[in-house]
Image (cartoon, rainbow, N blue to C red):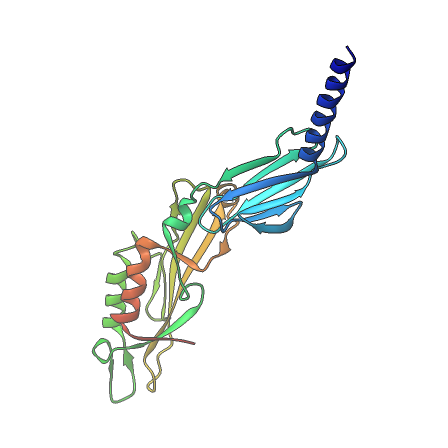
Length: 235
């Protein structure tokens, strides 16, 4: 009987030690391995994090995992969680798969027009009708219409081109604005490709913000604007 009592004490003591060791820390593993892990809004590591388990029963630890190209994940760890570790795999974000980074968006670029696209008469009057026609041809391959055209004022703007993405709650919109800044010394257009993004909820209220990315289906348009009209360079 005495031996049985001692065995019971030993087993209970071992169980308490195991539970105590298990409750000291909590491990979080994430895929992809380059994913950033935040604990209570504090960065703690890439792909792996270990931190102290909440001590009070009412304590909660907020976990956030994020990585470019994937949907961010948010969850909570409660003090009474019996697990010692968890593993998460982030889901692809279709926004990043369907867009490409670009340093040409959201700023005016100057295109010095090719000599074949304009004329200058003896009085110095510049005629860029050919350039406008070519610009229309290029843009109408990517936009259903041109929203505003004012040849005399030297201005053109497309409507917004909206794009939603599978496996993403983001919406993106793109438009092109063109200004004729020609002088006899330099016959040129300024072109701006505006690129903005918003969450599905924010998009309903028109709350978009600039993003240095472009929808992949519009990448050829950037190439055409750079090569078919003339020579493009930054302001």
